[in-house]
Image (tube, rainbow, N blue to C red; front, side, top):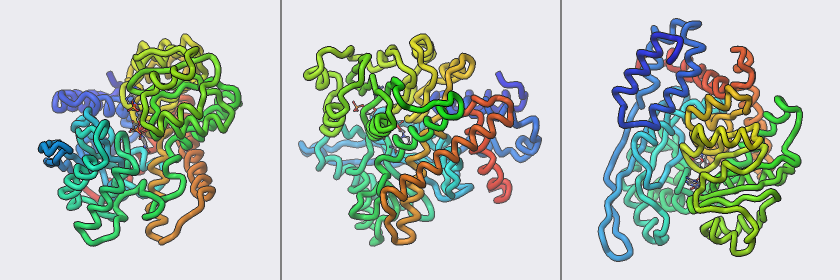
Length: 448
Ligand code: NDP
């Protein structure tokens, strides 16, 4: 229930109209929590119907993706791109390949991406796409045929000044390579249309590291500002063992943290002492099963086949980096009871809205993904700049720009949260800061 009657009516409409889109409803609900602080101060928000316009994607593209598997059988998946908002720049946002992909998930991701991209300070609009295709247990040849079929329809809708996709869950360097190759073949243009590209064809150094490293830079600022401390000696748990998680692990350890728990879809491993990081990197590189593989060499760790048991481990800091809806209100309470005082989202919306409200009301510092995981898209923006200038910056140059961007994002969010007398509410700071730039652009561009 919001203080504003206007927001209550608008949200009731969202719930009715999109009743089969729970992830999208949660993203809007969480955003409106922050808008409740703003709409009465600025009547033009209601008058200009900017929120009504913001919650509807500018365009949704959906298409058939037929492909032939290694047994010669024809398979059919669905491809999507949600071009959510281009007020401040071309659509930008990752592609997700996972069984769970549907329009609700992609709409929530595209909506969040709009504010995340705005927070980076770079001229990028919000979009998200993907398919219900599951690349797990597929051969490279199957993934290639799928990507080529996907691109044979998708290429009509993307371009450096229109929409520049990137990777996300289930969509990494391999998939980007196949997509770029096919795009080039179909258009006779070099593939400046994806970011996250390999270094041999226009990628940026530090892009693979960027989301996980950026998350740690953001957490460092939180620790410094709110607790006058840093990562050294802090016990950290990280969910997932994918692109974001592994780089968060690497940077957290480099900054002095002790990572005591990790997970993947097969289960979790946890300990009172530091985990064996080299073993985890090796399992992740070989796309192995974390719980089963790790305990072969370390039988003394706690473990189970339920990834959610990770949140029961004693820790100072939790970094959910796997997927959406990982942390329920029950997990939030377990974390607090076990001493966790800081939760920062590496994944998109891993915390349910009740968990976020619980953290904010119970003294657990909380960083929303749209701010704390913005490092990936920020370096994607830097990759676009390097491509446009035909330059390659060094790892150190990109990493230093990434750090500056993450520190700026934290400061923006913190400043806004303080302005509204809720200095620890970084979700409010992120939502309002991200929104104001998009709002301004939408007003200046007229009713379109
Ligand atoms: P990956 O596919 O590389 O990795 C995802 C990891 O999460 C895998 O290890 C997977 O396990 C694990 N996982 C999935 N579901 C669960 C679960 N329920 N419990 C525990 N582990 C689980 O994806 P990314 O690392 O790229 O993305 C992760 C998250 O970060 C997503 O929410 C994405 O939207 C977000 N994000 C990613 C960015 C990027 O640059 N890649 C940028 C910003 C946000 P398994 O290994 O068993 O499959």
